[in-house]
Image: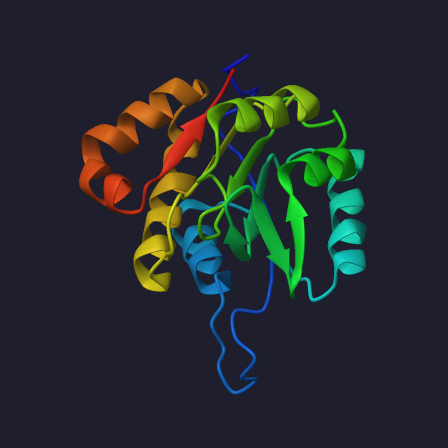
Length: 189
């Protein structure tokens, strides 16, 4: 189960607050706009400040009308095996319960620090529970600009291939140094 249905994979992005300072406007939305303008990748972008808000939008993503948004992009602070919604940790197991097994032909990308700095068995359990095509993300504290640029390259590569193994190979071949620096992982069953 490594082959996507289509080349065009639109993005459903949920993003947390990066800082407590409301004067700062850090957001991944500019990267998504860049991809829309230059690659015609459609996206939905929502900010989530509470676990309830996060669950609500994930329930929306699961609706049939959003099937074309086959990449779930979670842009939050993270810890090994978790994302943080405000200060509330959501583990990979909890996330799997929220999305259920409805992720066939879908990709889940953790644009978060350290979330995939966890045991491979844990990540594969998440994949089995969700039926996701693959999961990808980072294993370290991330520099915002570099990781955002890598996210653009990643989302662009997903448009080139149906086979996620080829996406992983493209990233390793063309951007291996940056992928290693960010401790990027792409895992599939």
